[in-house]
Length: 434
Image 1 (tube, rainbow, N blue to C red):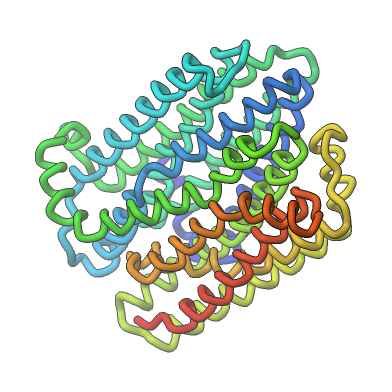
Image 2 (cartoon, rainbow, N blue to C red):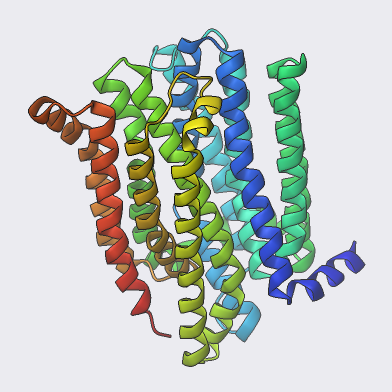
């Protein structure tokens, strides 16, 4: 294993290989999301599938509820690796792992309460709980991914993630070929757990962690309180704001109308946004080793050049995907939702514009959180939350005042919010200095 890790570290220094690996996993993650919808809309009754979409939104809330801890530890561990300065202590990793496992357990209990109270109604509670486990496993995977990235073991994690993604897609498609959907989901959960455990074992080896440090919660917790609290308030606000902004329309649309089409159209917007943000995250993560190194050695010229390069690539990717959506979104939405919702040309054009606004937002957020610059993100994050919460009431107002179809009015307002904030974030990015 040590020989493999050393070889991958050498290969990782060639950014092209790292970029291709990250983009491949982004494509697989995006494909997994589409396959989830493709399979579940066919194996579940429509009422259960509507509840399943709410489960997906709830799982997204849970996965996002790490409150930026993994981002902070990335910045602290990266600084420790490059400069051998700072106050990083290995006990921090064990505390964060315990915290994230606690979040997953709490989310599972809340999901059970929601089903018991009838907020999420389904005849297959065991299936929903198992799927929640698969989605929530991403929380622990994020900790392993960020820690390994800080330690220059990006490619090793990407290989583990590839196994997780490919097996997940194969198991989901197996449900259409006769495999029980419950068995498919349980098998995905087991594979994901094994991959994450291998990732954490690599962190253990790289940091030469004594086993006791994983359980030194008192000492680690004291260190976390001393060195994380300066940022944790901001990261918690950012996390809660972003969770609500990107997932609230699932709930506000469901409250505003019983028609399933607006919910499916937003699910299409959400999936396209996740696809673009995933690709941009891969581009930013590929550039972050150079960006962080130039930051810590105070190389302003290389720092600025790296930022401009990743911004240009991100806008180009968003523009390309926007064109593809305009060209192929009609048949894609038809196949994805089993003809339950087909987007028209105007709706597709609106989605394309939204993606163009999303690109600079993603670059700004991913770069600044990677550099532990949280304060400049607060105001635009709250603005995005306000725009997201107002999108459904505004759509109802536009629909009643001007006779616009509700779905079209919602998509137009939601896209407008992203375009305005994309302009704001573009200026935030170009003004970043070491």
